[in-house]
Length: 116
Length: 109
Image (cartoon, rainbow over all chains, first blue to last red; front, side):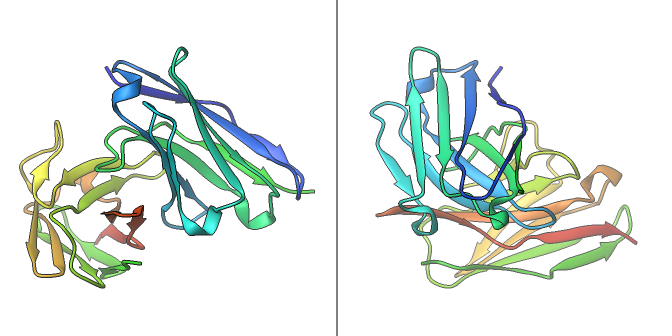
């Protein structure tokens, strides 16, 4: 069965970077891209971007351009999302999900807390 | 940028009742819109894609429909496990962008 297993929660100080991983199994990693979606406490869903896991091409939401980097490692079927220059309003659960049209399987999320 | 506006923000109904959730797009979309259900402490779950297709294992009481730029998720007879938050989602192809509505909270009356 399709599974997306994410790394654990992290606490980071303002200005730092965070790297969240998402290990896929149960399907061919290169045939479906990975989206990243975040959810601030008590808030709705916010799409951050998508990586084509076949060729590494990325599409980022304009809000995150220049601050986010999405990569994928095909041999280990793992996608990564790095967010830099963290601010307090980046505190959120970060989800990876398969695809974008639709996002049909989701990881359980990684809570990133930005606090000094 | 396409904006999705969901209404109502919250809905209070009893088990067995019919629920109608709306999602309005700011401009005409292609034949793509999806709906997700999110229960407390869980990731979102895909319910409906391509406007009206049910995802795997989604009960038949969930249906999606469209009228112009208005999209509707209907739950024909509410079960206790249906009380959750629901989000609609769209995507544009060039450039590739996705966005979600702000959500509708379905509460037990």
